[in-house]
Length: 204
Image 1 (cartoon, rainbow, N blue to C red):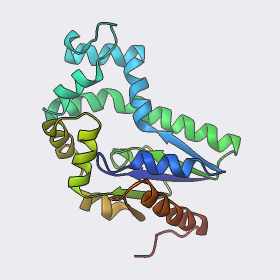
Image 2: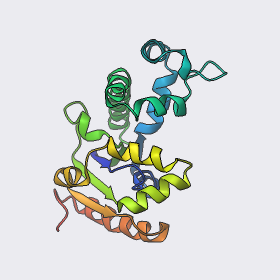
Image 3: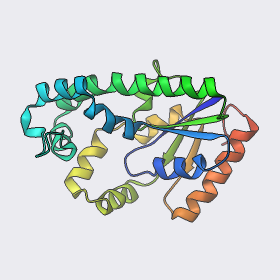
Image 4: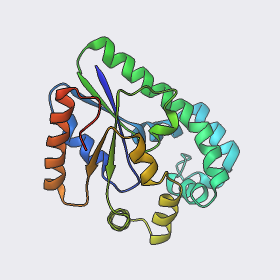
C-alpha cells in the first residue's frame, strides 16, 4: 500500500482531485478536514477548545460554531497555533488509525491523505509521495468567495498557509488546477498514470 499526501493552499482543489481519484478501484481517501470536524465534537477536545477560547464560540445547540472559531483564529496567529496544538494530535492519531486499518484490510493499493497541513505532520504521518495541487491566487480567492467567504476572510486564510514555493519543494508531483472540472479530470488521469508506474518523482 502506498500513501500519497495531497497538499495545497486553500481553494486549490485538493478535495476535488481526491474525489476524482478515490472513485477508482483500489484507491481510498482519508479526509483530514472531515476529521477536523469530528475532533471538535470529541468530548475531550471540545472541552479543551472551549476552555481556551470561551463560550462565545458555542452555537445555540451547544456545539462549537466553526465559523465563529475561524474568525478568531485566522485573525490571530497565536490563537491559530493554540487551536492546532489542541486539535492536530487527535487528527493525526485518527489518520494513522485509518492507515493501519486500510493496511490490515488490504483493500487499497493507494491511499490519498487530503490534508492542507500534512507537511506540518511529516514526522507523525508517513507518506510515500507528496502531491501538490496548485492554482493562481486569483483563482483561489474566487473559489473561496464562491464558497461564501468574504475577501478579508479569504485573505487571512491564505496568509496563514505555507507559500506555494515551499510546498513545491516538497512535492513529488504537481497538479495544476486553474481550469474547470474537465481539465482537473485530465490532470487526475495523468497523475494516476504516474502513480501506477511507481516512479519516485514525476518527470519535470
